[in-house]
Length: 150
Image (tube, rainbow, N blue to C red; front, side, top):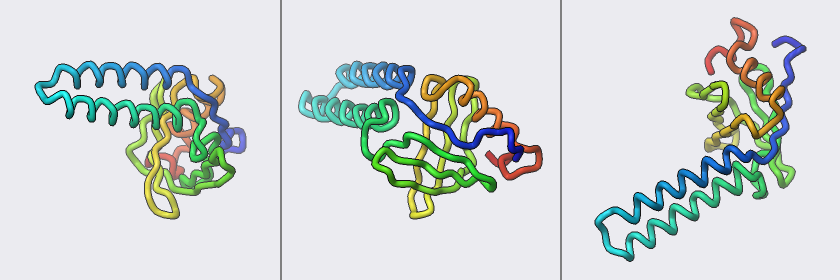
């Protein structure tokens, strides 16, 4: 990789992602209330949707939980190091199947300590220049580098 590419990216709370989670939660709740099932099941499923949406909102959109990723660094050979809000560093390898679009980047990560994690990055989650640099790095890399697998 060229030394001109920035490899350290700091994340900030994303208003776009927050709005997206809110809209999806509201649509899910509206659909659940229209399903032909008992009110008890509807209430239970609505609570589950609200809890799951709240978790994703706090962890990924607002970055306020202890295990929220607030920054990450990309190295050669598709290695990513995520810095969590509580000070821990998680290292893993980027897996194929990620998405790089003009407004969205989805990174699938296989953690070294086992398990998987996904980072969903929308345009408002970092500065516009850093978002553009990340997209270029993931999309083009250095030609025959291992980034081509992403």
